[in-house]
Length: 63
Image (cartoon, rainbow, N blue to C red; front, side):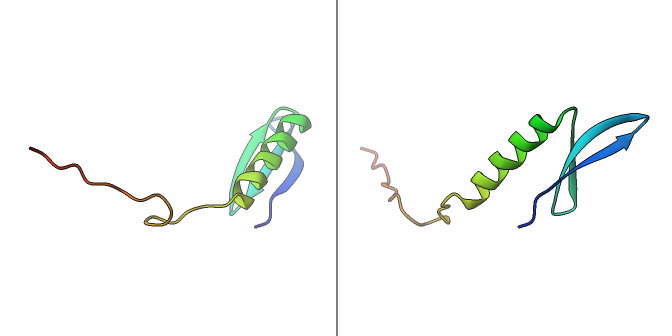
């Protein structure tokens, strides 16, 4: 998945924008945009369990 960071001019102000999958998230400064992009990439690359994998579910028995 591609994550892009770019500086844009909006309403006469400069801001930073993170874009991925057609979504654009604005930030006031480069450091915030970069931190967001790094965290997003970490979450994307993290292992994920599909429903039904891993933890077993125990049903409760009522008396």
